[in-house]
Image (cartoon, rainbow, N blue to C red; front, side, top):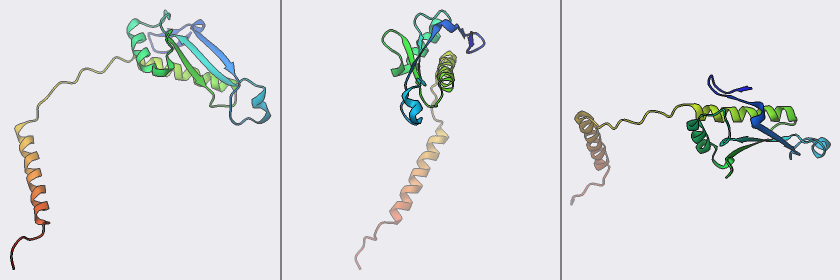
Length: 141
């Protein structure tokens, strides 16, 4: 079990890991060791997630979500398979935690007070006067 929040825990069988050869530094080792990790998590068929978390997760995942409802996370930052596996899992857990947070309350519409409107207009008038003083004098000599 992978603990995500107090109420959400993922079963190990829900996460599928695939390994591939990573590009980048590694010398001769990069040609023979599969260090890159592609983590797959089926959001739609997961029994561990509530429906509202699934919907928010689908929105947050963006391009990482396939048409079948599977989240794909690729990790190839590190040179070892173990660190890449841990990185991919951390990123998945962070994504699910973000989706599990309740949405912020809706914004209450407010109107500016009369005093704030008057202060704004007074500031605009003062700024306009300063700019008017910069103009070239108009008058006949």
